Image (cartoon, rainbow, N blue to C red; front, side, top):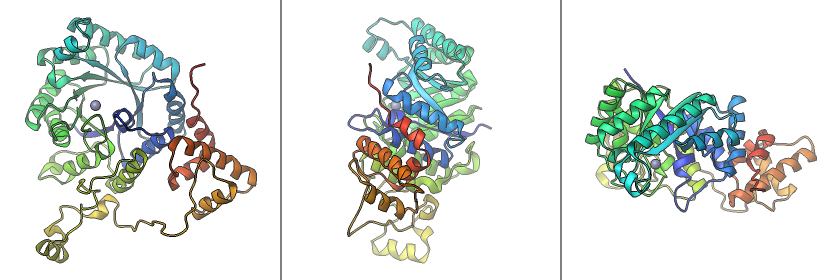
Length: 412
Ligand SMILES: [Zn+2]
């Protein structure tokens, strides 16, 4: 029986969202937290985009060092030979790639304006897969953009061509959030049976069904006999109305009526990381967590009305489906209400020493403290907000990697 794997796309779909973005250090922290959470793969960025090159290579080094392990780091590119060539030129040691191309008639006529036929789409994708293989890509996922509005026979043909050319997974993209739980279950099952390869579901929330669609899509794929890979983002941050929320997907699969008995994760998921990763992403993106967000919202375990408060005090299970501790909640948040010294792009050695000392990080020599301070200043320039403790710890522990992360070299 197939299993469920999580493939998080916060560092790709999340950061390409209008009005939002993350510093390269923040993207790295997200990869680290996703790894700790048990996520199979992080779609960690864009190998053809020049300002990503140092960040991507620094994160691949962290993988080699065993810091980002066992998580896989996959880059997103268009499914063209040119993009594959450019990706391997800019990030030579990239190992995992997602190749994406539109497959719907809407996109063929509306976006490509008739310049590409269905046959051209098949050919372009096949050539891109061949090129990625010849460059030594270890795994290749092939994405059908706008799959949910694609003619089913053509989608089947596209997925089959991808498989024949050696793709490892097929990504079914509900790019516009057009599916519903019934339609995506059906097509997920059909694709799994007919194409007989692992399938990803990539769902958006334009109709408020991203999580439900991801879950039922995955069930369809597993019922069709294949492994299912669910694309998620932290706090559901993504294009327009967003993607399937990572924590809500995990909760749905673990806690929804009857699901956990039948459908299993391929890797153990540390749900206790939920609070930390969601709070961090909220801070890094500057997007507050909605009060009613599943699991991590301020009201997820709050009770006021008489009957509910009385019931939950007698037995939490009366009005709570799961315990807050399971999500890593319950520790008090320490918020300074008096004097505060924080990191900044103009920090000096004294204030910096105070901040690091509070985390029990001490430096043997002033030189090494100044080196780390200099890196922290640059990290602050890019973040434009005080660094959090884990970021400062990271900088102190991996100064050379940090230097690479902070290197942004424009075209010369
Ligand atoms: Zn998307």
